[in-house]
Length: 223
Image (cartoon, rainbow, N blue to C red; front, top):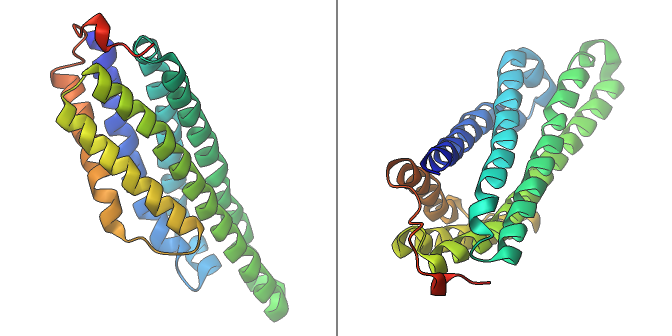
């Protein structure tokens, strides 16, 4: 069991790390006003960012699969909800990274397309970017809802210290608020991400060093 917990911890860190680096490479390019020119001149960075975000999406599935057997012992319905949310998150993330690949294809055409063609391609490119970020916000919304169930199980079962579970509950509430605001066209600010980021670093480190407290009493189970 300890080996599984260490793998889960490593996957959490891999997911967080690849997402941060991948989005850090893609976001500055996708926010440029000269979008297609920027994409074309940064093809290697775009492909690398897409690859890293793909790794993130795959790692998410691994986390869901490995945690399911343990979590369902404490609350089967919530455990399934968490599992389903992470699968949905992964699917949305995988669909979202198609956007940058479409932009790479479009970026080959502006020079030969002419003035009106350039305008059309730029508009199409901007729509692709908006769809990319909408899918990402949907993935974060699903993640936050499912992870609130996850943290509730952790809190009630005491599989990890309750202070750690509370950070997760606060963090994913912030992510839920941020993703909801973003989908409504509003900016919630980076501060809403901080507690969740702390949890997604602290939890895997705890799992790799301490692991779950599997000696919780049967009365703590939530069936």
